[in-house]
Image 1 (cartoon, rainbow, N blue to C red):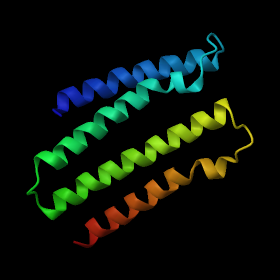
Image 2 (image 1 turned 180 degrees about the vertical axis):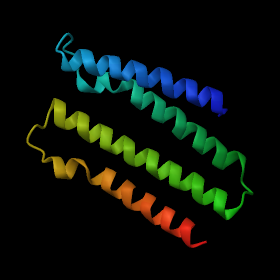
Image 3 (image 1 turned 90 degrees about the vertical axis):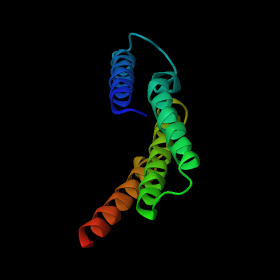
Length: 122
């Protein structure tokens, strides 16, 4: 995906998401939390499909590039799991502890720290 298209997608869907979020928090609308998060789900789906297409198209890429694409794919999936868990907690399961909700984010932070540490050592 080109950088201009990527930046435009991120800007538009983030703006739509925050407008949905503020109206839901203001209780102007009574939408399901999954509907509020649809712009973020769609944005992550675009990045997920783009990443899969890059992996399929570039079969003979270097190990470093393959590692970066794989880490981006894993981070995208972890963020998606976090958002789904957040929607489930807000909509249906209020008794779920917040510490369990943030396990994907903690895993993502550990992966980022390990990647940056490995990059620092090279």
